Length: 560
Image 1 (spheres, rainbow, N blue to C red):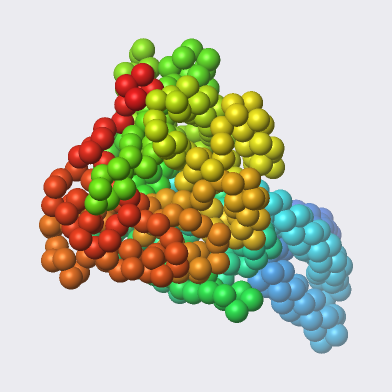
Image 2: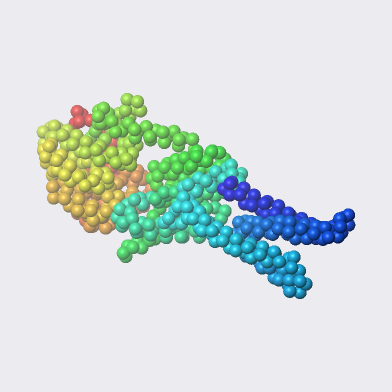
């Protein structure tokens, strides 16, 4: 950008110099005939001197400068410059013709040739310049413009940030607002990338109505966008700005008689508050977005220094997770589930644990999402399944009635083409009776690919495995899942259980979930029971099974 501005300045300066030179030569041309008669030359030589000086030498110089001015007008003004020189040269041509016809000024005849040559040369230059500019524009588009949306791409956004910080368009303060669509990958996988592209272009079109100059938006990734706001806004103003964008993103998109809605997560970084370095500022807004996604999505996060430390911790976990199983750092605990009101053992849920010698005890809420992000969850989930089934077989004879073994299955595992074969192999290798095996899946499985999910669940049911819908009520909860999928159990999320005693009983939806599930012949498990009043409420409202520290904490196999 700096080079472009300098080039324009040089072209204008050169044009001014040529214009001054042209005026000087014309003035000299008119002055010489007045000075020459006063010189002490013989009349014949004085006449020859005037003709040579005014017509030949100075006239040629004027013609050359006129040509250069015409070309420079085209280069500096492009289309406007071309038409300007065309008008000037045409006027000069007609003026010379008039002089020849009316006043027999044959000495001005070279002006005709100069005007014609200037027009021809400028026309060639203008056409070539247009072709070159078209090529430059095409290359610029490939380099700085996103093909799908026509928005600036990542490279252009970085360039603009640099210009705002240390380039020709410096501003005292600006904010970066980065956002992407939550769970958009599921839309692409379920509807297809072409439909996903249509959703993106429609959202971008609608965003253009609220993101007005001097603010600007660019697409820097698949569903990732960056808004640059060259103004000093307060945190609350930036939050409101993000909320307006989210309202646009959340507008319904209809496809094949179904309505789809998206939400967005936002990361915000500010100049100069967070950094004065363009690269660091981009990293910081990226970190803030990452944090918003980690906090449950559909969130707005401002960058702070703690995020950098958290990201480094995240990277450390990801780096060490791959070898954690080999080193024996991953292990499993079993948390009992009880039928109520008799408080009779129903079975155990398998819970993964990680004891790192360098990082200490790491919560599954920290390392399981990371394993899902990088795809390692397939290997980790297979190891957990095999380890749990093998351990279960060792303790089976210690119980008069065979308990259920509940294992969490990630959506990534279910999408693995080898998942069903892996399950069959584990069953064959461990000898577990599938009537005692339960797989817990989340609602996101149903969103990703409902047809595929239904097929896989039916295959698992055919093996004799019980299917539970985990964390019901926290995601995309839909009655259609309960009605259409071959489920056996619904698990009420701990967040609803925590509200018992915190809000009036009539406002708690747990009873409604229990009644609805029973009408669909589904059993109900409530997890996270830690207080007596929670247990009493659940028993009173007909919950079938409870799980929580009140009746049984997670324990290793030896404690069972």
